[in-house]
Length: 335
Image (cartoon, rainbow, N blue to C red):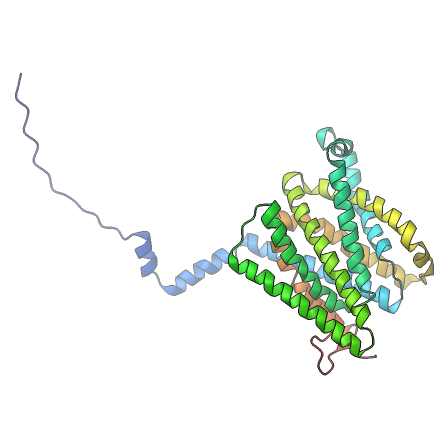
């Protein structure tokens, strides 16, 4: 047996020292780091989402504007009829699309499996629209748009419990600030309304908005779940089906006399058509934006609708601030 060979002598060690990624980051200029962050923040996807959110904000502003004209200038107080028109459009476009599908995505197959869920969703969505549109008879355009922001804390809380979305402490601090702001708005409306002899009406209008915002929050979170798991067409088709059904019943019971009192002419007809077009556009685009982002992100992007509504109140309805008023849409210039 041969003896083991001695170990080979160690060769020359070549050491290559490269800067670590952190070191490269430290050596880069701060300006380049800021550019990279901006490039990531202002990506194409983000810009598209923001642009779609602004389209939704403009549609909401159009809904508020046409509702205010109908209730204030033409005394057409028909919130259920206005929602009914939108649900009919959804039914004609999306429910009929489901009806002609084949297989498990057919309308009858969906109804057999999930009819009761969509029935509840249709009722919630209908009453949310009814409460907010009804509020235009009692309070101002910008008060409604500002108080409607209550939907944001509702969506955040429901997303936490049902969609298992996790937020940081700063988000919940924002919820508390938002709720405190809502309380200040309601108190301000009541105090100024008492000064003008309409405190109870403004309180009723504010409570209607808060109730509608709560129902909108439930509907938006439910919408996010359905759109991500089952699809946009199914959601809109089923909301159109049950929304048209229940709003037709509510219209026949509650609003048939109000509808007969409407002084029909081309201006009122144009306002109803404009309202329906804005509502249909909002319902059609909202699931697209929710699927790209989330229900919370969509409602945050809709905050700019408050700014658009403020401009409409100032330039179209001629609202002006009075001494001591907390926000500039309390009174009209011709009052």
